[in-house]
Image (cartoon, rainbow over all chains, first blue to last red):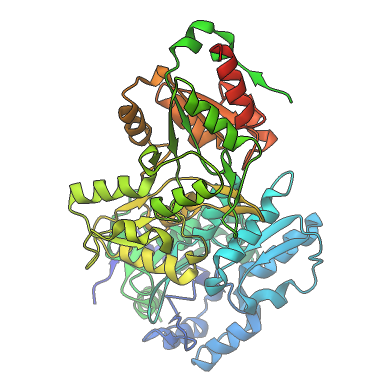
Length: 278
Length: 278
């Protein structure tokens, strides 16, 4: 197993001691998703268990928008993960808060599993569009429907639950919400407001929940730009794992360089806990 | 009927005399498309007839990629237009020429009506993707299929038959190929090669066919950026008609200003022929 840690906690004992919280991406780090609900990535169940038994705080931060949080967390519990709903941060509840604050009525283009999260909002005569990872619901007809709402508004207002390009399911790579966000941005000549990773506000809400500073936190993800780059943009360190959607070319990205690379979550946790004398 | 001609032929008699050829966009200028095949725009059948009876050359230039050219032209003939296949320039035949020249084997994401145009190409083990206005065929599954071909190539190669944002059918606005081009560009971090308007090579092929210079030609379209801006970029004048996908905001575009605006094709042809003493 090859692990390369670049100027990370491992290289810097004082930093290792200052680490107080770890934020874990979920899909591609904990598990690989798929038609059958997905499977845990080897070693990840035990890695989460070891982290939670340590003195570190642990939170989960996902752009998953296909399922209601309760259902989604229950799925991970069935895979064996020690995880609860209150530890999970996902874009839909954050979006609901933003829409309520601004008095907006959304037209939803989201996976049916996440629709109930928006139950408390008025959706008649919509004055904005919210898109999430709608997957098979991204039909021509549905995308055209969202487009017509936007183009009919004096000032088109588009919220996107994440900006990922694609993710990996057990049967291969799948297009993510960011691709359809770009499609609607181009169609209407607007820029979407992203709710979810890599939006700084989203990472900050997780730090606030732990009550720690960015330099006391470490993000671990399989998405170089949205997990690692997003976390670094907020002042955290970011580790890229070589699972999930990882591709070797990610280690030669022109603008984003992770603070460390590891074969999987188990390897990162090994390294962190060893450094801390566990 | 309000017509505003800005520094165009109408304002400049010597330029009017130098005009030798007129290039007409089709959808939104000649007709409005729709499920039923579409309907001629009032006055356009007669306007084409009058242009062809004059001393001007007339060509038709479309990004239409839903139908084989023969079928498409037959549809317009049934609407009453004096038009023949040899006068029509569309992206699919241009793409076939490019692919043959470069020895490429395409994965097609195009409307089934245009598939026969690609019959002469080997499509096994594809090494590029060609997208056209696939409309209902732009399902999540099909876009994901094209994405997987691209992301599997060492250097993803994407050809797009046009870059339009949307067009108008009888039942409303519809997303065009450019929206899905942007989606795949973002997914794979590549830039598509556009074949069709507003690519200069495409306009130039029409000028070559007439044997005239850009300053001797006038483009008439309903798409400010792709018809008017594209033609201007080649040195032609461009008129925007207030039919088809036209929206009033087009007359306040930040970067593209038409050389003239007219309520419809009939009004433009009236003005041109009057100026020329017809």
